[in-house]
Length: 95
Length: 186
Image (cartoon, rainbow over all chains, first blue to last red):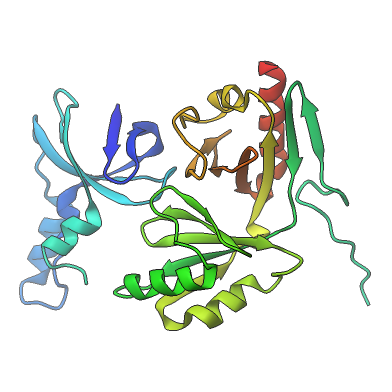
C-alpha cells in the first residue's frame, strides 16, 4: 500500500504506523460539564465501517508528521491524505 | 584527573574507511549538529532568523542547503538540522540558540549521530538494496529520512556522493549494513 504524503509524495505504507480513527483529534474538554460521558464516548465508542474511514497515520520512518488518511477499509483505496495539523487547525483545535 | 582519549562512533581513534569496488564508505566524525524547531506561531520568524544565521535560504521540504559556514537540511515541517565543521563550531547549539532567541527550540545533536560519506560510481545501486528511497529520482540537495537495516537514517544527496546519518549507538550495525550491501552489489 502506498500513501501519497502531502509533502513528500508517494511513500511505502511500511514507513507509517497506524493510530486509529481520526476522531481522536476531537478530544473533549475534561473540565466541561458532561466530561465523563464525553470521555467515555471518546475513549471507547468507535464506528467500524466497512467502507470509507478517516484514520490517523504517523510517518514514523519519514518526517514524523501525523496524517489524516481517508481509506476504504474494503478495497484499501486511499482517496485523501491531509496533514493532521491542517485538519486540527481547520476545526479550531490548534494555533 | 582522567586521561580520556576521544573515540569515533566506531570506537577507533581514526575514522574507518572502506573501499569496496568503485564505492568508498568513510566514517565522518568531524561534524557538529543541532536541530532547530520553530515554536508554535513563530514559524515565519524562525524561518527568517535561521536563513540569516545560515546565510542561505532555509531548506524547503526534503532539501539540503549549503551556506558559507554552515549547512542545513529539512527533517519535518518547520524542523531542520544544522551542520557545521566540528573544529570551528563545537558550540553550534549554544550559538544557534543565542542567535535564534525565543522563536526556536534548539537541541544539541552532535553525539546522537554517526555520519558516513558514501562516494563512487553506482551508489544508486547500493542504496537500492539499503532503503526505500528512489535515488535515481532524488537530485543533488535532496535530504530524506528512511530506514536502513531497521534504523531511521537521514540520506542526503551532496555534491560528491551521499551522506548517511544514523543513530550513533547503532554505528556498527549501520556500518555493517553499508559494507555488506556494497560487497553484495560490487
